[in-house]
Amino acid sequence: MKHRLLYASLIGAALLVVGCTPTCKGDSCSRPQSTEDKLVIWWPPQMRVEPGPAGERADYQTVSLER
Image (cartoon, rainbow, N blue to C red; front, side):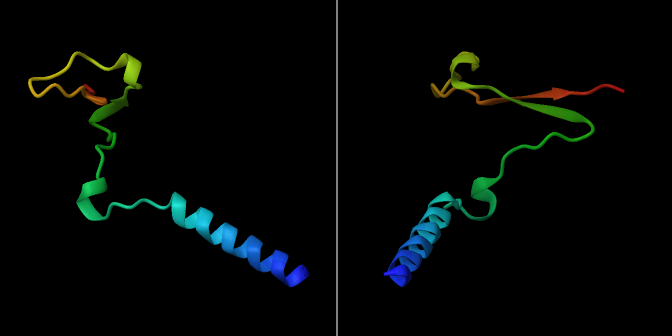
């Protein structure tokens, strides 16, 4: 009985880990990152700017940092 509980727990943990891994690979997952010259601000849906020409709303904004 203890072995069945252990196996069920291991299978459940494995499924949880598999469900949390990203499904995209390579450049399809790339997101702009902040650097020393620019800051990337990620906006929550309710704070995003007006829709662009294709109707999409930008989920981030890049701000240039002057030195």
